Image (cartoon, rainbow, N blue to C red; front, side, top):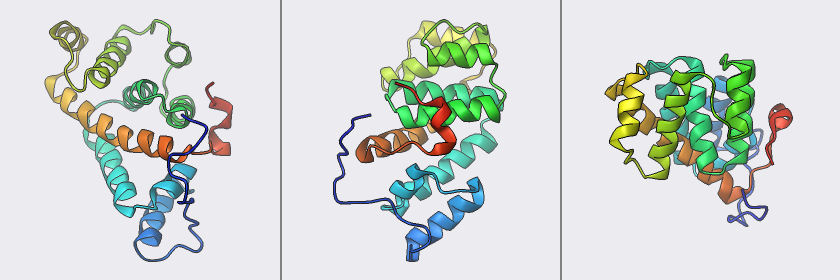
Length: 189
């Protein structure tokens, strides 16, 4: 993430003074997450962006059929390819504290090393290639993904996750979003 925000005049929306659509979407975010992450306060400048993010994120979490740890691997892969240090840190914390990603897998992902779990490695490789190729992974990658036990339907939910994470990754780039204290222990260089 660049140190200089692309967006210069917009500031994070303060939930306590927000009004109208900004207040409504921040109320929804607070109910879902329990606090207002800096990313959400920035995205609320365009309520449709935060609304779309929350809606798609919730659908991916609830409907994809991927296990919680697999979902984090997807979000981490997208965030790393998009070079979003904010989301990489946030999803590292969630992976470690909430989603049950094995410590050796999380370490490997964060350090760009081979992932020791073959199924999660196939998932990570597929997501990474999908982002890098703008949704056009090689047949070899898709076959490895399917051979690991995933389905073509899973590929569609990965497209949803990529869309959702791209919203947050690019918003964080635009604002040079400051990392929340909750994620500070997972900061990436």
